[in-house]
Image (tube, rainbow, N blue to C red):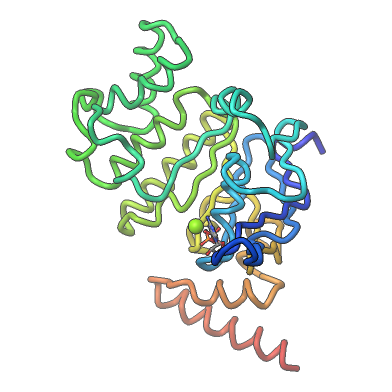
Length: 279
Ligand code: ADP
Ligand code: MG
């Protein structure tokens, strides 16, 4: 296989313990390894508190990595200094869960998208063309540039956040629960958008969600986190369809399904799996 775009090797993250100097540090990640190839979507799923955000933050240089490596294009960026981080910002971007707090409310959509381009001193005409292309890529009306974030719906704001993440043509986007705050139909449309953009641009995603259905829909490979460890990592259909680890099975069967036939089928599979386990 080629060198992975992102290669997380045995990463342990410890947060300072609460309650004074002698408090024991809290280990949020235990020797986690995970790789993402160019143009790939790796889904990271697990219940709340399992360490998904912490893993995403370790890639962004925002988590206290105590041991292990975060290789990006073969270089360890776990402890990159500010200058290097600034360089990396063109290549590694992020989309957060909450489109209401992640966009500066005082700026127009066009100003929001222009910001990363201006910082990089992209010439004005080129920047304007890029902004027009971004509107098209995320399917926002071309005339929405003069509007403010609050004039948009949640789904539209998330499109703006995606456009901003794409502005500098990154190789990797860390997506931390990017559709979790959206209603179901908006969720489906924004997920489709993520997929289309990936096909179009070959950007890679580390796609975090607590929702196995979401992860299943979008990921090539899926990693399952449980209490700071990856308990299963492999082909998306395999992990989400025929999970090996009891924890993944629990997570999988807890996922809500709208279609009653599929639900009945799922219940049947669950009984069979449980029977096989107890045999
Ligand atoms: P997830 O995204 O899967 O919900 P997180 O990565 O946010 O999980 O959190 C994993 C664990 O680390 C949780 O127990 C959480 O309380 C703890 N944690 C997260 N951030 C901090 C922090 N800044 N300081 C101390 N503990 C933290
Ligand atoms: Mg989280």
